[in-house]
Image 1 (cartoon, helix red, strand yellow):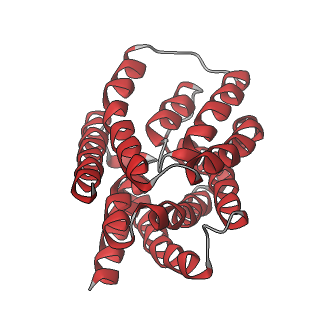
Image 2 (cartoon, helix red, strand yellow):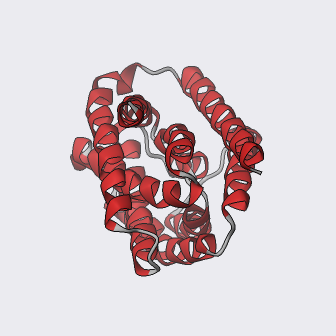
Length: 242
């Protein structure tokens, strides 16, 4: 039943993230923390995120902007490895609290970014990749930051979904390899990540038909609700375990 619950939430999370470009990690992470604890949940989610981003690339392969992906990834990949190494020395209690506070804080940050219509170039993508990559190594998801970055670059719909996924894929592969190098990604943890990731992949293919129907206002409401709920769940879990 625990595995079935993870798969059901993963399918829903994969579908939503396949529509709005992010949210799978935010939705699934509290469930993984509850089932496996924060120390296992983070590398499990890293493996699952690799699969989720790979599926979005496959769905929107022909529309990926590879120049934007390269600019973002060239700095983001090493930064993600550094962030993951930082995460491994943090106590589990601090991981729960930091992720929860980060998710809640992203709601006002996203609104601030939405009010300031920025013009983003390839250089901005490289700088953003370094900052977001490091944060991706530490927290479970930085989609609320990477999403507006690629939108301000001028990408929309399938091009946005595919390019953001391609850029994020390198970050999560780097994060997973760092976990494996330092012993946090055991075969058992990797298997759990593959199981969770399979449901995220299925959701991405389901989402394709809905991408063009989602209104911008609904997108914002969905993301705010997901981040607030997941952030509160992480904080509650931290105080329960304290």
